[in-house]
Image: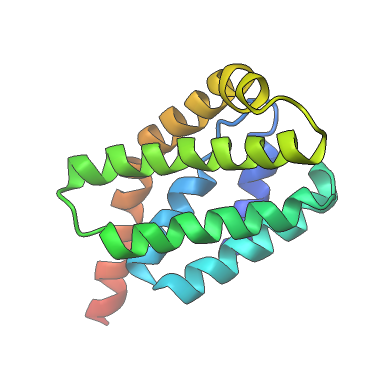
Length: 151
């Protein structure tokens, strides 16, 4: 169900380049459900949404890149809440740079022009949207998981 929600959210936010709440959801699932579950939701989301947004070899690299960043997050998520918000923003920006780097390698484009200069605004939008969505979705997850554990 969470993967279906993420696919729907990815579709809903498709008109807004790199503005999406699903990155925050993936990072929060690592905290509330564990890495394996979060990775599975992320992998299903990326794969299924690729049928709507375009399927290519890049989907494999998206899954690997975000999986690695989620693993880094798993090791370091016990930060104070404000630092968590900033760190997930940084990880979201890093995801964009990683994917842009793969594109640059695949299509033989100069890395610094494509991954850094051209992709900067898109990666910044992804980072800022994750920073905005993270505390909002955190409150929803916290409420759900606290209530879930009380029954």
